[in-house]
Image (cartoon, rainbow, N blue to C red):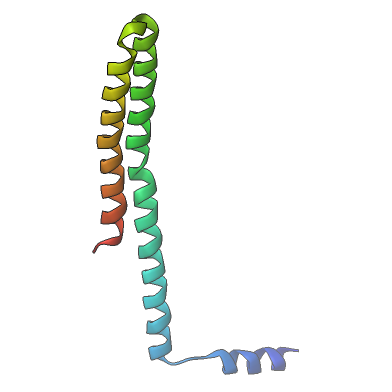
Length: 96
């Protein structure tokens, strides 16, 4: 059985070029994964901001129902600006 193990090991050996190629591919894969992970972390901030904005707009509407139209407009405008920040993070994640 040890003989067959040695033969298999000899067949799987590769030169230094093959090793460099594998290392380069691995580093590229890690780099791509880190970029996506970075965007996921960067998206947390705008998501929290949108949640707080919506909660405060609903709270304000409950306190003064006659201001609901103005509050909704301001809330949607604020959410649009926060969304731009999230999309900017998404685009910068792929630009090198």
